[in-house]
Length: 296
Image (tube, rainbow, N blue to C red; front, side):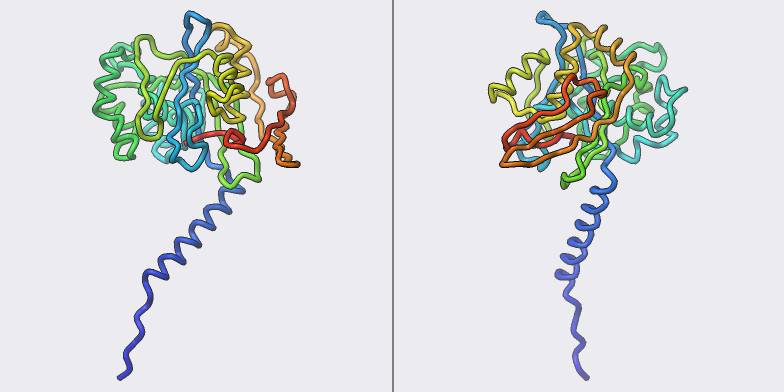
């Protein structure tokens, strides 16, 4: 009796992984990944400030860049069960609610702020409560072991989705190997809460004035990618949080999917004039900061 040749399981697994990665890459080209970014604001001594984090240099997408907290939408963000714990969801569809829940979750994971209210009082949680909840939930939620619904249910909270104001909507250009469909929201940082990076996806954090951040990028102190710079410039039109929030509420958000032109080792980004950035294009030499934008 001839011995049957056993299948090469290792080789088969490698082929399956290659086919899956290829399929995922094709899907991403045609269907950008839904994600959310939250721009936390406060009034400082030198004017309005924004909370920013530095991404771990080992991350494949915009590693080492100075960014706003944000990341991909999870399936758990989009469920009716999660929406039941959200404030201000009366006029929002499930997709919009999920986008805001994603923003609250990513801000909690990456920056240590929790936009949530005590269910029994309707008051935003204070510093001590935020620190206590962070110690118990931040890492499990980052690892996907628990959801924001779990946190809200266990701690008798509601998620303050109503505090997030739509500010911008950017889609990664089709030439990018990794694409995102990202909503940017403004939110006033909860009084008294102390933000902090997570020492995993984010390795440093700071409050900084938008103009100072842009000057730091110009002087090569910070690596700030294109979409982040554009939104810092847009924020620079306001010198306090109230004005920034009022302008965001008054202005229609125009979707930006930049046209990218690569000529002679220079990259030119072109964006719609009506998007409100007071410029239509920017050209820069190819380098680390030329990445389109970061969303974890």
